[in-house]
Image (cartoon, rainbow, N blue to C red; front, top):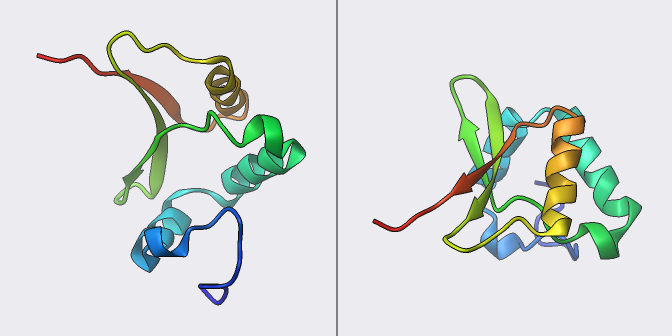
Amino acid sequence: MEKHGTSAPFVHWSALEESTLQLALACIPVEHLKLSFARLLDDLGANSTGFPDLVQFFVAARTYKFIEVKGPGDRVRDNQRRWLQFCARHRLPVEVCHVSWA
């Protein structure tokens, strides 16, 4: 957290609590973070959208899962599909959650 508050275009410090960052660092393997950031930086214009909506932390197992949420009538768009394929190719845990209303 030594960089907290410094200018960083991809980090919104006011929306990120230190405890959440610590949780992410404890649950997401460094290699997975490196792969994801490398993909982003490879082509910011194409890869800065479509990343899964949520991350679920499994604290006891020290692991995580990315989740793409789709509501009724919504579909996976091309940029989201590319991220899902990237995750699958590199064995990053990800799933699509289809939400329906009762």
